[in-house]
Length: 301
Figure (tube, one colour):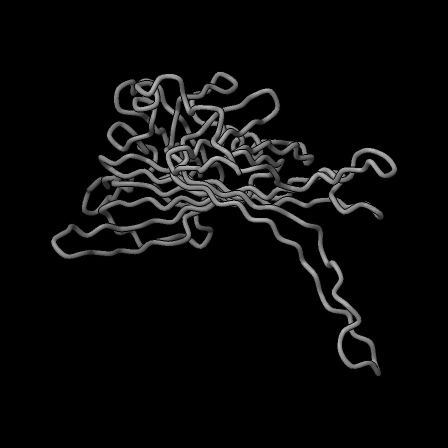
């Protein structure tokens, strides 16, 4: 019988090439699916059988603290942010994927989505989702072994998020020193500058696996497109969106969100969006609260 796993053991290790990092996950879900469809024939009652219609795939998704304890290519942040930035800015189509390990399970997958939130005086949390493919059949003859997309015996993780808990506590993104100063709405009449209260960021990726005849699992996987979105909360309503979606306060279409921690706020994780278009402006109010506006920014890669 495998060891019982308690929720405080939710350490997720992500490896990208030679870089790896263990994230402190608050939750994690793993699934494995296979698609089949029935086959019917004219003149026969009932199906002739159920046959595979797609390759078997796995999914891993988890939420974690927006940590900045890792350093990748000289830039502070977590490995998910590093992976997302690398895919988004890549000029190559071939995707190398990442290895995800949690609770004794392991699989090789590709980043589907990544998101996090930033609010004033609040700890930032993130989430990520991966699609996992197998690596096909290895060996010869009767000694062939099928590598599934995700497999393993459930057990407690043999790695810890960080060796120093104090380092983790000071390396978590927080809204206290985080800034988004290059997106602040300015009104000329009457003259007023907006105040940014928070931002929700997300990016999603599309991947195209290539399958050969006689092979279930893909020979390679190509990165095709990415869609990025940020919802900024302010206290100024500016409904004058241009037809092209360009915001008059940010005509270059570049937005940088600098995420910082509490203690060592000189260290920051930067998320940059280029070619930004503003597509939505809305306002909401709750009981005993100020009126806030939400501006939705999008970018495509």
